[in-house]
Image (tube, rainbow over all chains, first blue to last red; front, side, top):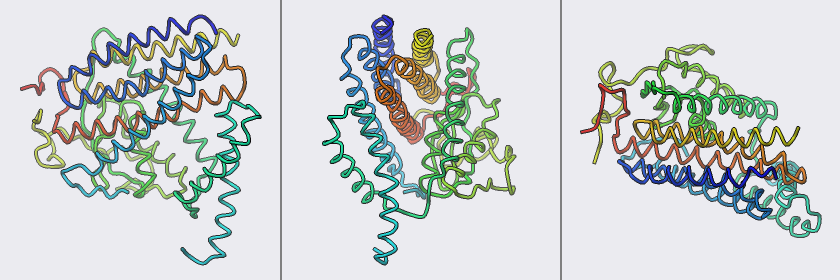
Length: 93
Length: 201
Length: 104
């Protein structure tokens, strides 16, 4: 612990809030989907910092699980994008 | 599936390769606690059998050197890409030259392509937008950057990782920079009808 | 020494997150914003994890932190491709400079 973790976690949280507000404002639906990206990276960062700031090592497992869920959701998301309704033959699995 | 003896040998080899990997993974997840190994044994056995079911052993093998080469290349380029985009975001006057480019993929269909498409988004200045047969539509942050050369370098690393052939189209080997062509509506016909129309519904 | 390296990496990580957010606020369209988030935030997370791994009690705990990185990379690579693909399916033209504004 260097004493830096808590301030940095708060800083990232502020970043996350600002970015979420920006992304939620759009203007396009694709912009709003950026929020999904933000949770996967900033959310995980905040969790690991908190784990090492407050000696709550279980938060590392929470961060790992969040990253894993984000990955699974992301892949499912991308695979749906693959077979988009304009029916292109992607030639991939 | 196929003849029993052949498959059986492949399965044994695959178990011997995969089980230690899962055991290592368990050791990391349990943070080295030895009392967790009872549960760990069950987890390793389950993971190994699930992996055999989901990804049956095949002749295609990852090469370790290919993996290290790819990892090093990837690490360096994500550093480069992150620093580059940070500079672009923070400099007083943003100077972006975004453009759609199209790249003819030289990798076989399947996992190599999926990996290519996904890693491109983390490389400096490129983002995979759409894969249409062999043609990959890319979005680049700055068309003045040598994106085609780095995309080909990435392709070569992925080809080595999977042990597949890498043939950039048009020319026999390497050096393919001109086969990436700009897709800026006015100069070239768009890849699919009407994608240049501005904001949709 | 380890403490110094750890602090440096943590600050560097926070810097890249900050740059990613600034990019999100300043860049002109969804494609360029995707570049900013996908690259800068992931590098930020990587630096953060490396910095914390230096402080970990055991090798296994350090590796566990580092394991998060590739998983998060898979997540953002897949999500950013999905978003770009979606934006393309919505026929969003990329921003090409002031003269080429595509806003109606």
